[in-house]
Length: 120
Image 1 (cartoon, helix red, strand yellow):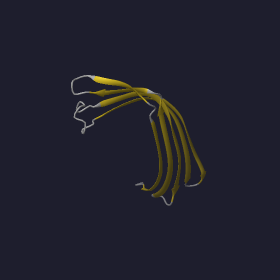
Image 2 (spheres, one colour):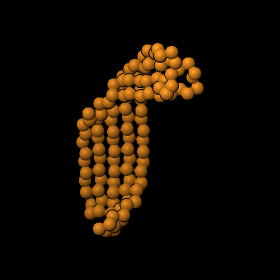
Image 3 (spheres, one colour):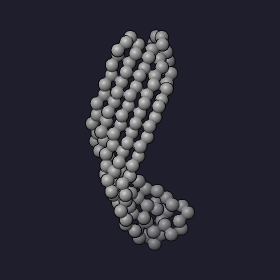
Image 4 (spheres, helix red, strand yellow):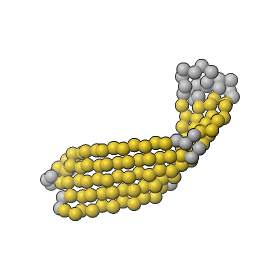
């Protein structure tokens, strides 16, 4: 689940400004293949599980150049973190090795510029 707020303003004719804030509760799950490890099971060599949370922030601006053409700029930031979790490494003999999973962090930033044509 997540909760958020979105704000949109039109301070001038043709100009729209926006802001978004979201708070997420997440269940992190991952699995992968270590194809260069002959002692590990294939195609799933390990799996991760953890719980965490994250935020999404976004600022945007759109300006209408004419009745059909618009330009936009978006700035986005995401950060998700988990608590310690569980890591299981699967062996070719059918067994597995349990171990603790350290915190997982994911962070990204984006700057986007767009040109839009609207068919009216």
